[in-house]
Image (tube, rainbow over all chains, first blue to last red; front, side):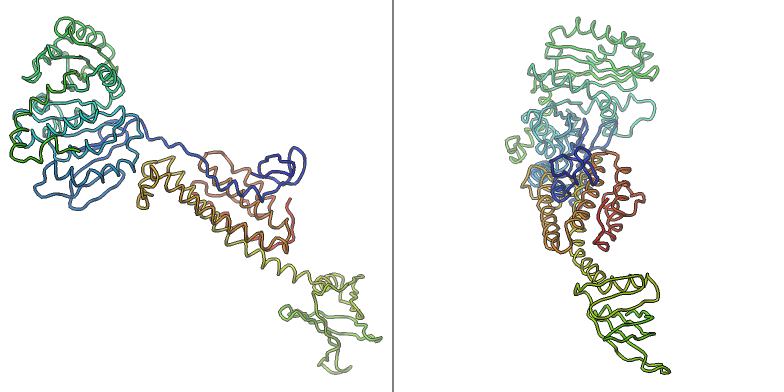
Length: 348
Length: 250
């Protein structure tokens, strides 16, 4: 903007409104070398998807990683060139730096919450974990291999989870058998695969991401970085009878390798109608006092919603890191013994 | 070439009637012709003048005097026109317009380049990740993110175009005058303010219209959603800045 000979800065015009002197535009054009400043808003959540459809729920920004014939990078998609018979190590060794660079370009780390949703047995999961920037409020929500998975799947899942824990990310694991169980429990609009079932869990979980990330962060401060997730989607008290029964049923869903005595923290997130709030809060409190009293921290958070009758519930069991890895350790070792590159130690 | 009829010409102590004055802008010459005879159609050269030398020209009603020759034009308006031409004003205006035109392209380049940066910032505000992806092909990783690297490179290029514009203005300022150059710079600032408004979201339409009116330029609505399109619209209206060199702002 122009100034007069007395130095008064003015808006567009020809005479100074303060002193009446003519305005000079000669110097004013130099100010046009500075562009207006912009503070881009990268949103609260950035999500990375591996081995599943992207853009689920109210997830903010999403980027899908998938294999394809030709390498391609867009705002929403990172296509990794296929490797015939490729293992997690092939993708990891060939594409980690490129994916890291791309995550930097799309400012993935600029969102408050950084989430990785992955089928941990997918060979691309290790790549994704390794490329993620090491920042606070980063969590991996993974469907993990179980006893029924092949040793190769167990190997990939074991390495992906190990890598995430080593890099300091919060890990929230849904064992594959639980995803299958949700599949069989679904009555209406059932997804057609275990992967679809996991996608549905993710979609509902994203609606509670603020509460989820808050609880995970609090547990991190007391040294609990790994959680097992036990979900109930579209549950009904007509089936469970009362809120406390949901937790009782879930206690039987724990993996064989995990006992109630191993539980370090115990939390529940519920999305339900207002009238059910007390039901779940009291049921949670009773179950906790009776069954997992030794947990370092326990909290039930309820988000009220308008749906009548049904509820979504996610119980998060904080455990020592080794607990879930035991489920896939045998398969991991069997493969690593024959293929030394497929060891956790291969990761940089 | 323009020909004026003259009722009379006084030259060399004689008076000639029914003469003509032929002004040739290309050759910058003026010829005074008289009839070859009372009943003859052809005419002969009476005097030859060179215009634009700044020799004094006096006008008194329909009479124009310069040096030792006096014309009597058909009317006062014709006399004024002849006087201005002989004083070199028309040439001066044409020369000034030529000189001012030397600023036009550098000014266009500066404002067009700036529109590119503004367009990027608007995108960075509305869809930041797509804006980053759009500039990623040239990202060399010298700076921590593509936006910063793009803006650093952009600033350097913008400064070059700005320097070319100001150098071009400095080259002609002495001959065209400060007022004409300042008027062009005022226009540049107005377009810059319009561009900034697209990023900041400040309503600027009314102020811009008033200022364009003060600059005696078209005040029609400017498409405000697109930096490049809006800038081009304003540039298309800048013609009078380069053709009316002697007009002063305000």
